Structure formats: structure tokens, C-alpha cells
Image (spheres, helix red, strand yellow):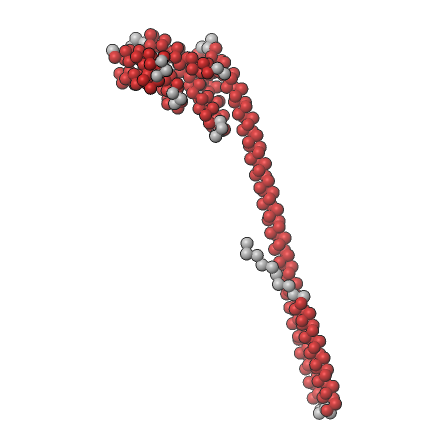
Length: 273
């Protein structure tokens, strides 16, 4: 869109409204006229100075507020321009109301354009608001070609932003789903690790029980030898020697068995996370 489409009404209306206004205090018309002169020269700070002087005499003037909004818009201060144009909307003059609505639409569009690369959602909202003000301007003047053109243009721009916002949302959702999948795999791996540790502890416990049971059997067997010795009375030297050898063999067998049991024991792997 041509830049002129967004600023032409600001300049034209500023001059027209000065000629139409008849209710200013004595100093107000001179201040507005001087402000308009600076406005046409592109000296918007100087123009604002004189418009502010006129506002002292006529703070609620729709003309003064409109002109201030036009100068603020040209300076790129769109938020303050919108405030000034909103005051001009209260005008009883439909021409002023129409142009104020049109320029609020322009200001909303400009604000949205500034934010579309940093805050896409806000930009979408501002574009929608701009469209509403263009509609209002068209309702007040069906022949407002600029408002119709801007409405069509911003409508196309809004569609582009909405498509971009949709893609961003889809991308964000995909990333979130991927994170959930990774988290799920991590939880599954942690569960399997705990399950393995439980199995190791259970195997170690069974080995310990088996070892304790074997020790009890060895003790009972030794008691049986003692009882046998008491029943038979004194043994001969040869019987004593044979019994000792038997005890040695049994002790070695028990020792070997215990060592084998210990060899089968694997302490569980502990994690500190």
C-alpha cells in the first residue's frame, strides 16, 4: 500500500477543519493556523507546540485534538495519536468523526506492524481493531475510498499474520509433544532400572536364605556326629582319625559351597539420581 493512503487525510483535514471552526477563543485560531503552517512543512514538533497552545483555550475542541493526533501520528507516536483522535471522535461534526475513525485505524495498523515480529498475537489484535475503525469510517461516509482501500489491504495482511500464528502454534505443540515423549521414555527407563534393582535384591536375599539354611544343616549334621560318638563310647585312635578326616572333608565342602554362594551374589547397582 502506498504510504500516502495512510497519511493523506491527516494533512487535508487539518486545513479544512481550521476553516470550518468558528467557536475558538480569540487566540486559538491563530495558534491552529501557525501549527498548520509548521505541519505542512513537516515540522511536527513545532506544530504540536502551537496546537497545545490552542488546547489551553479549547481543551475539548474536536479540531484541536484531531490536529494534535495528526501531528503525533506523523511523528510515529501512534499510542498518543490514538488518544487524541479518540477525543475527536466525540465531535458533532460527522466529517471530523469519520476522519478520526479512519486515522485511528491507520494508527492501530502502524502499531500492529511494529509488533508483528516480536508479539504476533498483539499484532493480530491491533489489525482487527484497525479493521473495525475503517468500517466505522465507511459507515459514516460510504464514499471514503481511502478507508475502503485500507480495509481491504489490512484484511489481507491480517490473513498472513493469522496463517503465521497458526504455524507457530502448530510448531509449539509439536515441540511440546516431543518433550512429553522424551519425558515418557525417561520415566519408562527409570521404571525398568528400578525393576532390575528389585530383581537383584530379591536374588541376593534368596542366596542369603539358602546359605543360612545350609549352615543350619551343617550344624545339625555335626550334632549327629556328636550323638553318634556318645552312643558308641570311646573311639579307637583309627576311628578318631577317620572321623576327623570326615569332619575336614565336610568343612571343606561347606566352605566351598559358601564361597560359591558368595560368588553368585551381586550387590544391586545404586544410583544417586
